[in-house]
Length: 368
Length: 120
Image (cartoon, rainbow over all chains, first blue to last red; front, side, top):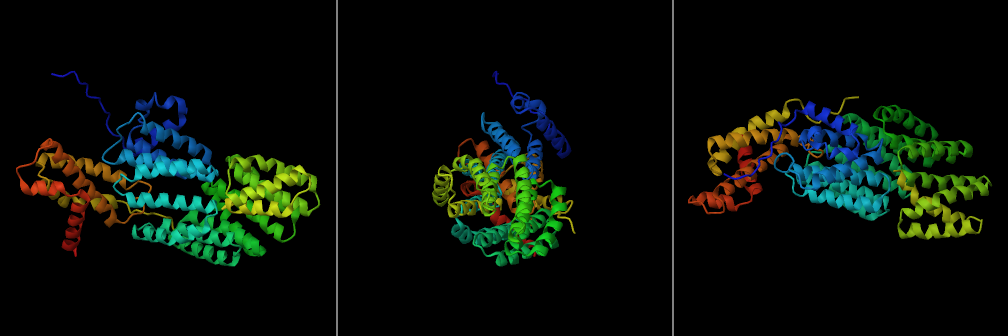
C-alpha cells in the first residue's frame, strides 16, 4: 500500500451554480481569493466560463477592472499549475483570461502590456480544440492594436484574410466587426464619405442580424464621420439612435466617443464653446473608466480650439496637462517628433500650432 | 429589432446525440476501449462539449464545426487512454498500432468525412 493521497475533487457545478459562484468570486477581494479558491469553486470550469462571460460584457464599461480581474485569473490558473476541467479547458481559460487582459490594455492604450498579453493568449489558445476560432478572435485584437499604432497599410493588407477566416468558421458577427477597421481607416485617411458608406453598410447588416452592440457602435462612428463633413442632421440622427442602446448596454467607451463625435460636429459648424463643452463631457466619461490616453488627446484638441479663440494661456495649460501622459504612452516616431515640437513651444510659451495638430491628429484615431 | 441568438435551444444536445454512435464506434472499434471505458469517455465528452459551445470563439460556430471539435476530442481521448493502457509498449494488434501512430485530428477528419457522406 502506498501513502499517496488522492485529492478529493468536488462535484462539478451546474451552469446556474457557476454563475452564482462567479458572483461570489467578484464579491471577494482579489487578495483573499486564492486562499478561498476551493470554497469559491474558482477552479471549476462553470465558474470560469461565467467569470469570462461577465468580463467580456464589462469590457466597454470598466476596462481597468476587467484588466485587474483577468490578470488575477490568468495568474491563478497558470501557477501553481492547476488542473482545470477536462481536456483542453485549462489552456482555453489561460488564453481567454490573457485575451481579456490584453483587450483591456488596448482600450487603455497600454500598448506594451497589450502585446505581452496577446502573446500569452496565443500560447493558451494554440493548444485548444477549436484553436482557429480563438486565434482568429485574438488576430482581430492584434489588428485593432496595430490600427491604433497607425500601421494602416498592414491592417488593410491583413483584414481580408481575417474576414475570410471568420466567414469560414461561421462567425458572421466577428466578420462584420472587422469592417469597423476598414471604416476607421477611411476616417484616418480623411475620407469621411467613404467611411460613412462602410458604416451604413455595417448598420444595415447589424440591424438585420440583431447585433445590437455592433449597430450602436457603428452609429457612433457615423456621428464622427458625418461630423467631419459637417452633416449636422445625419450626425444628430446617428447619435439619437446610438445613445439609448449604449446606455442600455452600459457601453461607457462608446458613450464617451459619442460626445467626442458631437464635439467634432459642433466644431465643424463653428460652435467653438459648445464643442469644448462636448469634449469636456467626453473627458469626464473617459476619466470614469481610466482611459487616460483619450483624455490627453482631447486636451490637445481643446487646446487647438482655445488657440483658435485666441486663448493661448488656457491652451498652454491644456497642453501641459496632456504631455506627461503622452510621453508615458511611448508613441510611434511620428508622434514623438510632434511631441518634441510641442514641448519646445510650451517652453517658449508660444505654441507651434502645426506640431500640435500633428500630435492630436496622431491621437485622433485613439477614440476609435 | 430581432435579438441576436447565435445558438438555438437544444442545438448542442442535438449535435452530440447525432454524433454519439460515431464517437462510440471510434472509441470501441478504432481505439479498442471497452464498452465501460467508452461510456465513461462519452460522459466526459458530453460535459466538455456543453462547455465548449459556450466559449468565446464557439458561441457562433455552426453545428458542423462543433461536431469536428467533438470528434477531434473523442479521438484524442481514445488515443491517450489507449496509450496509457499500453504503458509505452506496442500492442499485439497491428491495426491499433497504426492508428495510434496517426494524429487524432487526422483520424477525426476521416470520421467526419464518412459521417457527412452517410448523411447525404
